[in-house]
Image (tube, rainbow, N blue to C red; front, side, top):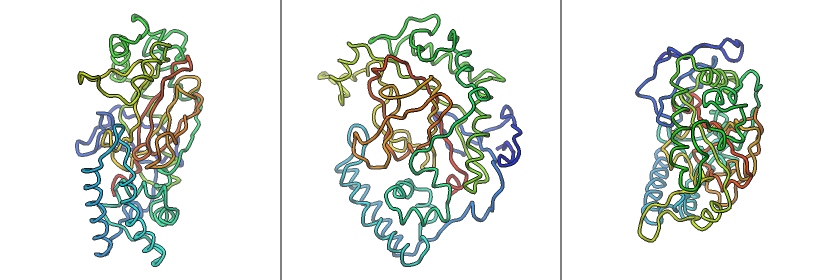
Length: 376
């Protein structure tokens, strides 16, 4: 893979990704290959640090995996993909083993390849302070997977909203009214959300990404290198992998009829005849984790960047703070254009609710993996 080399901690020079090649052996993000980007210098031994596990604890870990498989086979998951309480309880003995070993030895004892790159280790760091401290001592980048983190940026330097409006042909760059202003197509209604309007939006978005020298893609790549790369350098990283293509999300407002139908169909997937129900306009995603729903690599960090003037309340994304949280425990992100949220969507549930704000929310959704977590 051709790496784009720059010392993000010192040098502000942006290296073009136009000629970067992809590596077919690397994972994909949203059906697109990811780029590798060198962000700075660090100790290679530290970046590729791996722990070996003693036989007794390895056996405990294998027992945990078997219990998890049996639990998934019997109790399973809810329709939204959330784990059952029995699955959460099955983790407790294994967590106790790790915490006890950590307190006795003063250093973490982990599986090498199977556990260090396993989502359960990262999610357990959310609920165990002792384990979190032990892990962070050797893998500082895991701090990026814990909690939520807002990062700001200069909208004049990285004017992603303006570039998107130009690509879509939106007059006046008013993305708050995207559902009304998309040229050449009628606004979406109850029956056409998955029809011509969405097809037109998707077609124009995809076309804008394929244009050589796309201002939108250039701005996106520069944003990753100037806003994310320095953050990774501060966590001892030498490189990162990030989504080659960002995903465009929109959340149109619900009218009264659509809201009524949404509430009536809440939690339902099929009608009485077994036909799959369409989700009405204004509902983008149901409650899920990216690890369960899409098989995203466990060390990935979600970046959610609104392009509308303000994402709040029911037009925003609801994100739960911890893995295995009860449904309804999350809060809607409140962000202005010029802010982006980092969170661990691989293990923390997130979803949207019917948009009753009257404002269309448009946002970008992409991911990155710190090099040490990807290589683990």
